[in-house]
Image (cartoon, rainbow, N blue to C red; front, side, top):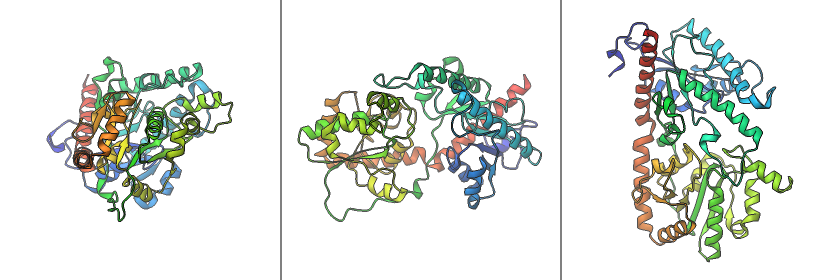
Length: 426
């Protein structure tokens, strides 16, 4: 149904003007930043991004639609009470967002506010602003998300996690719509809350990604791992363990792991490493270098690279291992597929939503021998690697390019407006 076709008094759906959509997040571009820009550039919506003053100032050149809100106090670092630190940070953010949106509403009517559940927290907005509220929740808690039993949380972390889960459950109940990035993430919520949750992964500007250069000289067969963080949840230990075995078998290959060491992760491995080594080992990666010495001698770690350099290096990888252990959405994996990468991934969880076995990659059980056998088979089968890569590129771009996802988001935002209208009528 086109926007102008629905005639709901006072909700903006029936207006001939474009809907006014305000995205909220402490970081810009961050979550939904590029989508916000795209909706404005294409004329699909009159979209704005509300962020913290520093990010607004740094991005002034990107347009006057980048607006600022001032959190009600410091949101960086420790808060006043450890066990409610995420709640307190979210409250400081939400109080500042409410003030900014209240001022905005005096100038223009807002149709939809799209908030990051923690970094643009909407829980102070309910019943306070006249707009449909959409909350983006990546996953409700680490309890639901999962963590490696070898690196468990301590009691204080479990208690803190329960408060964050409480905040997300409240948003799932009170928001006019919740968006999760995957079916896997949606299933982490109680069934009673799932009816108000829709699944949509953020879009990618594939056209802006540099095309891979054709190698001028032969290079060694390269096996790669790529993720924002070299963490247990992303499967980095699995990559190192399998690499250790491949090197032990004398496999002639180059190994490279892209990602940050010692950065924030979706698990508790960093604290476990500090305790195990009494602080003498810097991070999880260095712990694994001790644990898997053959892999340590073979794997290259480029570290954090400028994006153009990262693009060049990723294009040199012949086969990606993506042994995701716990995760609900991995933008890096979508980018690798959209670039035409050949990927091995687990036959469960989020990765299985992106990859169709033997079509745009290969799905494998949690068994090292299966991963090793698949790696060796693909190493000797360049035509199959090419087939997987071509299908991966075509399918990822068809499903996740901004041109494809933007209309879906507009449909979700309209759904949120209808939900709000129905609530108001009760």
